[in-house]
Length: 251
Image (cartoon, rainbow, N blue to C red):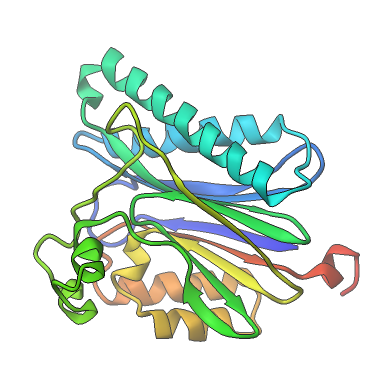
């Protein structure tokens, strides 16, 4: 199994409020995660860093998961704990009051994936049946689309497009949405912040993710396109490729 994480400040923001990575537990199972922080005075980057560090440290101390149900439960519980940690940090540091972060995470094993998310950072999946988003944005415009009040096309240019309905660290009781599914050899996952999806269409993402290039080159190309189209936001992504042949040491 191959995975690659990349983050870019973009061309406008003074600093990078995104964070993420690819981490392994004691049995070598993979966790991919992306977080997009928010809050003034660099509180956003603090929020995303705290969330990623918290989840990474806990993940690296865990043993392997044999079921998707156990994986989903772990993700839910660990994000609840991370939420508590963020709230405590903000309470003890006035400069960080109101900070928060989106998060999307995926536990990837040979037989299944388990995905959790809060906010509008997304997870997409490529299978033999096609490419598509498997998470639902916790955003105002997505709720307007779901309720039939506006179209998907209207949502792209809605003045309140960036309003989130849920974010880690913003309220005491918050729960991640979780799901799990089987996946097979040559399937791929894409986890990303909205700095990518606000600039690159799903059709373009699909085209990129199906390229036979190495994951680093594909990531570079996607980020370059987002930057060429303005790069107003930070851009982060993880690509995971279920490539068991490579995992077994074959070229």
